[in-house]
Length: 392
Image 1 (cartoon, rainbow, N blue to C red):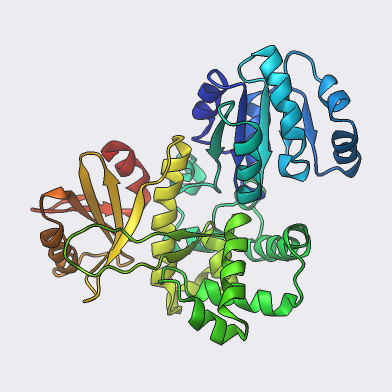
Image 2 (cartoon, rainbow, N blue to C red):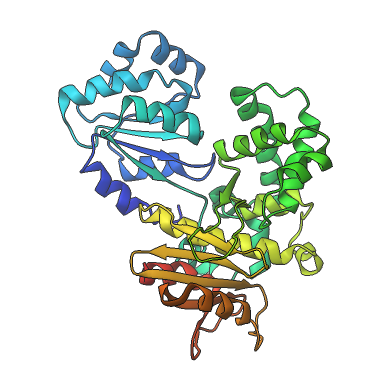
């Protein structure tokens, strides 16, 4: 198993809360992480129909089978009513780290947890493997940018040396056939698949529901529901625009990104690494890779993202804006392996607009050398996770 950066955070939270809930995409490594972190805890998986029926029909007896070690309960969203019984159990025993729960549907699960386990559970999110995690394994340190984009981050691809196109194709088919049937009843699977592929082609772009609706042939209301569905099942996420009273009209629509860049590439029809060299959307996929690496860094340390993009009505734009108590960090993203002399000109203009709130500017690029320029840093994308840790 490739060591996961979330593990020490998971251990720490289990000493502070009676329940720890780990959410994230299917196959991101949640079960493996929890079992390796708590090897002495009994394990049960609510994907199994017999166990699911047991938990649903006799929750008291289901929980009574576990001793004082508690348990790891996988895919808790399959029996959300069990959360109320877990609340009673942990309130009676008052034991830290009693239950470790996992789930793959974030919105429904978050709502159920807020009703039943408020104040009793820590919430953590495990995303697919980060570049920082791969950097710690010698056989993956030399992977090229295109290899990283093509493979994405699902652990099975690396640990079992599997063909990414095969794994991602099966992943998407399973998602459509199983998860969607649990969440909603789709009338037209083909239109939905067309929509998802279209969404992949708009990775890193501002979401325009009406435009997507016109291209797919459905209503904008349906597109909005489908985007929310992709977010609920950890396929995509929206990067919000940054707002402030600065005398400029700012974009109000978010940008769309995928939780796994390999899946986004596969949905675009990229089935081999060499396809990326000439693909017109390679730059967008590289941007998705960088944004995702920053997001993974935040979640792997148990924090909540405070990440945005900036765009105003006269098209001044910066790809990533990080907001902290001591100011703003502006990051421009370029997939090139060299730094053009005018690469930071748009970012400087935005820094002038935002004034003293800007504490630093950086260019994240496809090269390997870190550079300290007069007014900005040049950061290799493979090191952006460590950079964020040092500057948070």
